[in-house]
Length: 159
Image 1 (tube, one colour):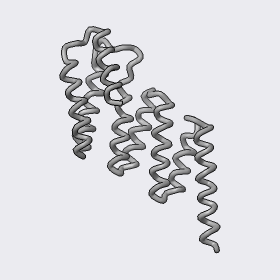
Image 2 (cartoon, rainbow, N blue to C red):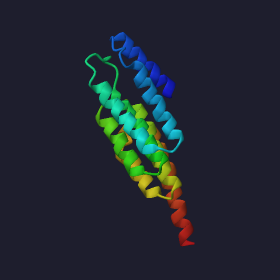
Image 3 (cartoon, one colour):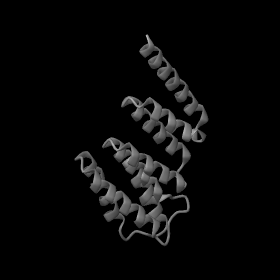
Image 4 (cartoon, rainbow, N blue to C red):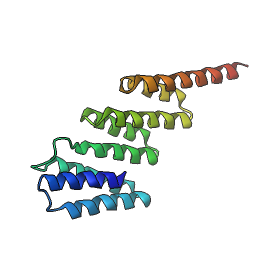
């Protein structure tokens, strides 16, 4: 994923004549990736937030580029470090800034699955219900599966 992002950033920068700090920005993103693999989540998040600000403040930026995309990566980091509320905030912020709904949908489903795996079926259902409009077909399928699982669990506890 990182290489794809880099290609987009470089392409946009070259297209719009912003070549001054391309190498430095590439190194920053590469450093963030290295920090992630070393478990230095706060530092990686800081670099991604700095990169968002940098891209937003460029005088010339491709009209299709949405620097808020990096909020998805920040949310992913938060989920990786077991901070689902912080991940949820990052995903919702990305949604509010026009990041592609399909990408957000994937993240919301991952967040829901994370809660399910932690035993929070009710929380998982709440998350899916509150964002059902992102992808009604997939969310309804997950909701149906979770509802059956919850019902089975309740029936088992009654017996």
